[in-house]
Image 1 (cartoon, rainbow, N blue to C red):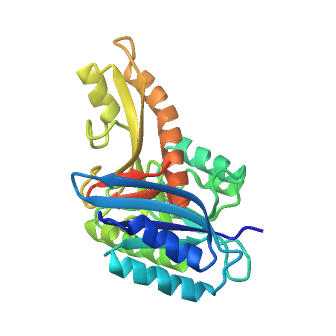
Image 2: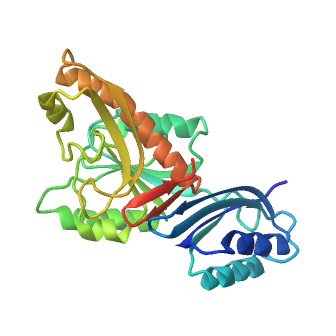
Length: 290
């Protein structure tokens, strides 16, 4: 039986990085199954994703981790190491919380994809600032929390949201059309762990009414963008985007209808790639080993 692990690294580009990692893994009995790499020559930065099997290690996991740390220190690497099984053999799945408002299309899509096994994670809870989508969460047996948020209560509600995230040991928060602007403190606390779907091909048409803006400009393409949420509204590192053609005949309602299909697919791809440890960020850019 395979026991898989994934190693994601980024560091200044120099000779010997690939050889150093391969040697330390093979030297401890790990079997490399997949390796992908990218060099950003302008930034002088190197990125790599390695999937390897630890079923036949000649040492223990602790020794392997220390050996990886030594290589990381030598090459000034930032790295993430994820084992897909616990030491006792039980699956080690990431925990996901979904934040929504009243739009249900992205929520339904994520719940259905999870049900059929397309998203390999545990759904911890659904949270909303409206009670409308509780029946949807109930239908899929996922806990639902309703926390109404106003300008006056925002700080208190965000503190409660963070409590729930910590209580459930949530690894990723998905904003599935959660129509609220998060505070700088909230996004900083969960940096790299919040994925938002924006109903526009960013950086065009930021804000809350992009389809209306697109209609006013008479664009011939509309899009959707999944990105990591940061303190800068709709400007975090982009994970995935897609577009669909439109014309002068399309009303705002037509654009909304076409956009909903894009939003579901683009968000699902971004969430899946994050869960599979395929995304690395550098500055305000991302490298996606899809």
